[in-house]
Image (cartoon, rainbow, N blue to C red; front, side, top):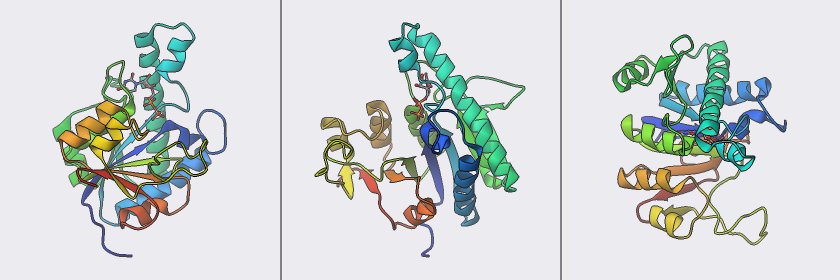
Length: 240
Ligand code: UDP
């Protein structure tokens, strides 16, 4: 396989991928498989920041739709992302990969707070840094958290691993003729409301020149292929 194109990346995994084939929660066997993929990327010399969503456990919008106060529900969502971060930390450490979790909501007994310089040091020492609790504020999502950490940690790219293999011109689940983009500009994603990440996350990446690589994390070995510039993916960048 060709040498990696990137030195430091941010990998965003939606909470849903931790469910495996379950309808809810965390499937430890599947998390272990994901951890293998992360380890392979790290063994290839990459510095890795991880952000994991919480949608497999709780989403603030869902709570609000059922009558909860939105901010309160969002805090619950943030706590869900911490649970996922701890599950991933456990899986990685069982493979011998050193990690640190840094949470945007302080939780001293469980993990570190987000401290950029400390995170830098962890990366230098070869640790994977898992950023939990998104940006630490309600009305945001972990996509925005991922874009923020990618900018703050000066990552070369933001890899968004989901259950879809890229960005389409319409929803491939509803339209069998939907076309996948190889590359697409930030502005087109925003103007056409293509479902990649939240608009605020896309805008933050655009303003900081961080390419977003959208790919499916569900197939084994795909992260390594995508990191090598191979495999099925869509790259969101300035001029496509
Ligand atoms: N959340 C939040 N602020 C943040 C990040 C997350 O309030 O900065 C809450 C929000 O309620 C969100 C939930 O945490 O619905 C889980 O995150 P997200 O929906 O991004 O998870 P994913 O869809 O990636 O699994």
